Image (cartoon, rainbow, N blue to C red; front, side):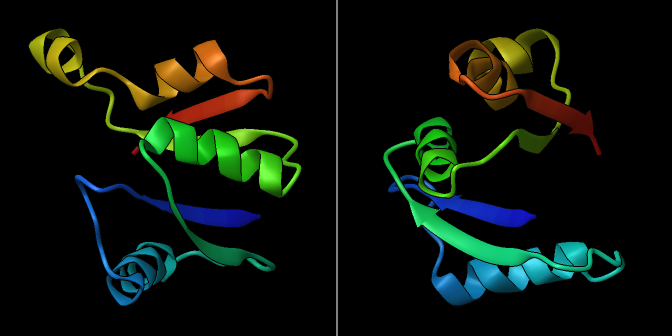
Length: 95
């Protein structure tokens, strides 16, 4: 499993900040074998698609906020964009 944080110019974090955030998120889970990755790209969607090509991924799994209504209209949906553009299966789950 490859855990991924996409850094964009609009939501930049240092490697340390991103690594700490990922580790804090997974702290209570027994994930077994995984890699922690930070990838820079022009958008989150592009970063996920490009990283999935680099590692020759079998599927893309991501959490979603499940926004609806105006929030969905103004902010869009990364999961929806990926499902529409990825050639891989995209699996989303709401936290």
